[in-house]
Image (tube, rainbow, N blue to C red; front, top):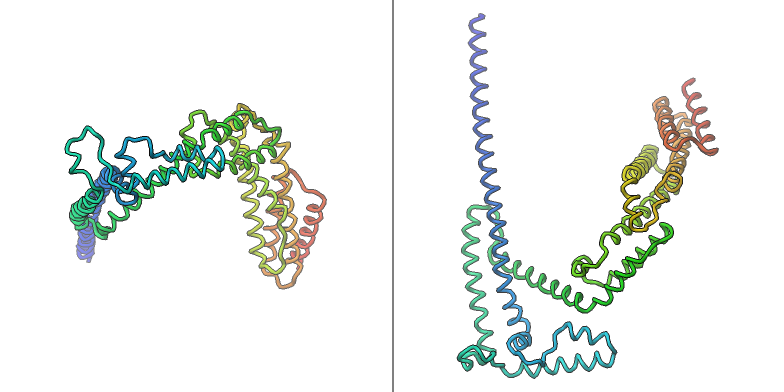
Length: 401
């Protein structure tokens, strides 16, 4: 009998070894396949970047020839008649009458130059062969079709390796649409950089010279600044073209205002907390605990970064006294007494009812939360003391039962 048991045990061990070897082989195979997929993904990403780079140059041609024949005339004609968009934007800011007349002159000049096909500049030879804008426009679809055909073949070969790929034609259309949107976006940014220079320089002086007296004034200034910058297409993209823009100070002002606003909003939410008798007890208690967790976490985060932020704010003449214990942190800690009061009153009411199961655990839960808030706030006020006495009385009476 022992020999048979040993043989069975040896067979089981051999089976386990075989299963382990098979598992190791599968693991090695999956690791290799994962590595190959990562390499394939990196190759596809690099190819996408190269395709985008190639299309940037081609897209400029498509944009000019397909969407506006007037742009072709402006590019090919060196005469001073066409007026750039930036100059038009500058003229709009002078007077209303000049804005209307200058824009009308620009449109009229563009019509006159777009109607007849303009000849290329003198240096290129054979100008007669290049006359006629219609011939230049006819060549563009052929270039586009050839490009799509080549990219379609390339993408189809890649899709055989990578399952579930996007069709090449749809991918090319999406890429062209993305380039068009990007081109319009960059054009809008460039236009605003040229036309809003005086406005941004004025804002630079305002930000550099501001020295708020308190955090409330910081809030008002940040709101005013955000309203002014909201007129820009993309604030960051436009302002990065102005080296004098005080980005560090503007970010510090916003950080201080938003931090104070978030803390005051949380404090108001805690102070407005009320027990709803129609809600289940567990729901009310969880809401109170969640608010207490958020309160403690927010105050802890502010206290942890207070020293660093104070030095930063002081360097930019931003008020920082509100971050100390004698100001907002103390107010927020005291506001937690509202949570403790509502928490204890709800448990006291539940303990007073005869149908409350596990009264002892419920009483212990109320005492724990009361102790937590008591230690955090540094004590109880008169209302919290009354609520605690009621909880204690109800809990002890339920234990006697």
